[in-house]
Length: 379
Image 1 (tube, one colour):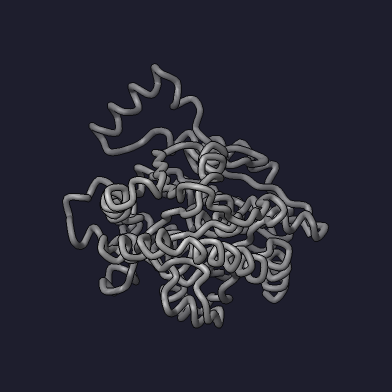
Image 2 (cartoon, rainbow, N blue to C red):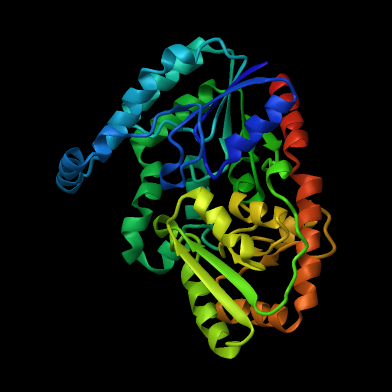
């Protein structure tokens, strides 16, 4: 089976590719490396010309004057020149309904080329798209990444790109892709409500995690408990980072001799992974029901992760014991959870073991790749 994966978020398609290759598939990944995270790809559409010093100055001026980023055009052009390499695949899968991240009209033009040159096209629901934005804006009581905006509309700059997904030019792209694709696959519980009633919904397939790349070492606490917070400035409010920061201020004063706190800001994926290796506890996000990729990779290493682990998640996987800490956007709750772990280090070690066991059971990249193949073949 020849598979073309277009777009990348948080290493999802990389891990799926690794599982598919193990099963004998030929797989090509085309994407823009997800910005500063620098994920590996087979063919990159990342803008380069617009990063040069002289051009970038002009680019910033155009953004300010016309609210248009010419880097999007460059990404589209780079994708266009790769079209001859993206033909005659049995399966094509988009990470998002607009995976190229170029001008919307140009995006639809390019996606038409992909639909016409290949057999089956599928779409993932693993990030914010039209259906998710429509659902979340009409269900404001649901935990979601846009809740902070409803509480503070001064955050408009961070949320502009998300609300752009509701505009007519994006909806046209959404309608085209959904009309022509074979189906939509949800990747975790945070996206399922928005798509489960759609006629092309094919079910939930959990994120694939390459267990071979993440060695599990049982946590040991010799002296201080290390707490890690990795901040992405582009999603600061969407992840609820401010609640973690305030909780850490309290914890650092309350347990100065018992904890070490590591905080990073917007660093490449490889550097990020290495920096949190020393950590016992990782703080991920507060507005989720389920774990995203970042949390799962940390859990694979046996870390205790503060992330989405709501009742819906526990029920879905038939869990009777915690495999992660359900992080709420509430400083007192986060402080209490951290305090309990610091005062009961044996629970940190036990929870880390359960986290690894959970990922092995539910997110094994080869088993997940098998589920994808089965789903693709069903349509």
